[in-house]
Structures are given as structure tokens and as C-alpha cells.
Image (cartoon, rainbow, N blue to C red):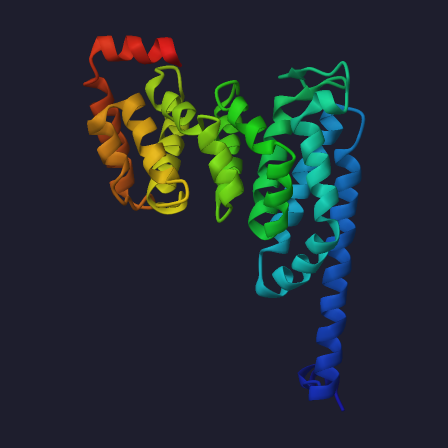
Length: 285
């Protein structure tokens, strides 16, 4: 039998099942090993090294969700290691809890926690909360909602602010305690400030408008025992005025040009706020 004939032969059903099982086990092993390696790097003593660790973690999450076969294996890997991923992320987002003398710095040198690595940590947190439901419960109990709400207006880059917004939305999806905590911490008001302030980059303003719209139309619950949606609507109306608030209360398809036009409409409505109202809001912000 020629080599070409052998190459064209198809394995029988039994052998095919064995090969598929071996492939699944190899994929599971590779994903778990890569996740553990990235976790080790994310615990390194230097910022530039930890940054690489978070980038590697994000890459593993992307690989683990790239296909149905990978997602099945990765779900099991995450179920084994989610607590370790969450713990290292919390340590980076709350550096004072781990490093008594640490400061958040834009620099990548030394042991200080850089904003760049915190940005990557927030991306990993978002992916973890989406993939593993228990992670968002644990993150909420650890106070990460407070950490991200307080960080919203302190980020020095658009990438960091957007990652913060992404992380908050992931924490709140289908999670009543995190939603209630976000509203209690005046998260709606702080998102509105991102729309009102002139020095906010356009990409951040668009993301803030998109997420305010999603929160008020799809995420926050309506009705008893606590009507979070109505409370959030009142807060947004007080911050932005009725015309802009009405635009954000409409269902918007943010994947089309309509979303872009609506953001421009919101900004136009914000310009109509009186100087007295802007002054009053600025004093209370």
C-alpha cells in the first residue's frame, strides 16, 4: 500500500474517539499549564513582570474561549483556579493590602503597582466574571465594586477608564448585590460626570453613555423591594438634565451608526444645560 493511500485512510469510530479524547486532554493540559504560568508571573515582585503576567492571563482567556472545544476544557480549568486568579487580581487593584509602601504609578519600574498592570488586571477581572459566575459574587464581597467606582475618575488614561467601566458592567450583570452596591456608591453619578467633563476622551464618553444606557434599560432591576432602576433614573436626570436623560432611557443598538448619533445627541443636550445648573452640579460632584 502506498504512502498516499495510507494518508487518505480515515480512522474507525473507536480510534477516532480515542484521538478526540487525547486531543481534549492535551488542550486541557495546555490551558491549565499556561494559566498557572501566567499566575506565577502576575505575582512577580516587579511591575513590568506582573504586567506581562496579566497580558498572558488575558491571552489564555482568549484562547480558552476561541472555540466550543476550547471553552469546554477551559470551563473546567477556570473552575479549579478561579479563586487564585481573583486573588491576584484583587491584590493588584488594592495594592496597599499587599504592599504597605506601594503607590499606584504610571511608571513600569520598581515594585510600585503601575496603572498599566491595573488596566490589564481589570480586563482579566471582566473575563473571569463573565465566564465564572461565582467570581463576581466573591469579588463583590471583597469590595471590588467600591474599588472600581472610586477609580472611575482617577484613571489617567482612556484605556484604564474603559477597562474600569468594563469591569463594573461584568460585576453587575445578573448580580443583585453588586448592582445595589453600585447605585449606593453613586456609581451612576460618577458615570454621568464622565459625560459632563470636557477633558474626558471621546472614546470614554461613548463607553460611559453606552453603559449608562445598558444599565438603565437592561441590567438594573425594576420594582420592589428596591427599585434600583427608578433610583438610577432620578440620579441621572439630576446630573444630566431631562433632555439628555431621556435619550439614554431609549433602547439603542450600539453596534450601528445610530449609537454614534445618539451619543452626539446626548452631548448636544448637555450643552443646553444652564450655567447655573452646571455650577450647582459641579459643587455637588
